[in-house]
Image (cartoon, rainbow, N blue to C red; front, side):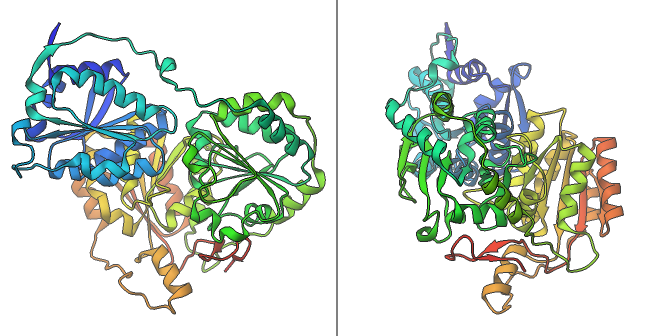
Length: 555
């Protein structure tokens, strides 16, 4: 059958199971938007306030649902406004397809109005990207882009389509997609290597698991929990791995790294076997790599060959899918208990850094009140800064994909768009965006999107009047020279909420904050909470950059 490029785009999106896209129209994508209008019963389009918001929304949708997120932007500035969101998804291995329009093929390379080489710009921050100059290959490119985005180590793919290609006509053949067939097989790992890992686990006296986002991406959380419980192994997670291991499990030691728990960081130093599963040994975890797990045998399992032995030299490095690793490993394991080791780890859990600056509203209570009100059944999105770490530290995550946050790139302004995508993908769930007053300024324009679609999202602004994380570093390492980190108080949050049509609460006490949260749970309406925090509340524990991971600051 004959179809034009825009029709092919829509048909291929439907083929791939896409039900929602996030975007912002412009001249180069008018043909696509016209086709989306005609097919609004098949694909829902969410109009964000800015293209960056669209990219973060697609990212949040992908992380919270496990599907490929899709965003759409016009040429030039529309395309470049997606870049931060694409880079965020790339660093955190999020499956996303970004579609951009461009000037007609005859105008490419002529510095035409709103022309930009977006494929060249995004080459280092995508798994792959395309410029489609021939409508005859458009369908194949879209199908391949989705396959690349979701297979292996997931990530973003960009498709740049000149305007004339969206209008050109060619023969189109529908195709039924079998997603299982798209899983690419990795080189086979010899069975002796699996046995060798099992023997290390069976014989270890102080085993420890460091689990990352790869567990979540491979849907292997259940298998991870089974391994830890069967072999009685204390287990930590990276920021991206939070939720992969049930934090209500007594074997959970919580977050690891710069702002990790005392127990997690001490375990790395004292363990005799470290199982690093789906992790990339980020500098925020390693700190001083020379002293990281220096007394342990290190086993790393990851789907990406580039991550094995990149930052830490392993004793055994396996490049394989984690679900395959777990299924092959378990037949060689001999269930056991490690009472002496587990008891020692439990004693470290009692060493806790509690902020006690005043009796005012505490960051810990931010998360405890949300957990109590929702019984732990909600999605927590964050911006980046102190509030992000408080959200990671003070909420008990029992399921994967419930903490939606920018880890690798650390993108301030991420959470507002991500919360939109998360809520759209999980319409019956409670969604909270935990923000700081600094991050809030980055993208609070997306409150308009939240209001426009009446999305039940609660935005909690941890308002301390400063760029809190930077100030914390200036206090610790720069003799309290607070260069450009004190924010003015011009913003009237109540007036802003009223202007964009969302509910508002001011909270400086526990009672005020609880009242605000309860109101959100009851009414399920967009809500902005201005939550006042002491200016020098800190994120603790903390390991200073370059220090050994067990050199922990508690105050």
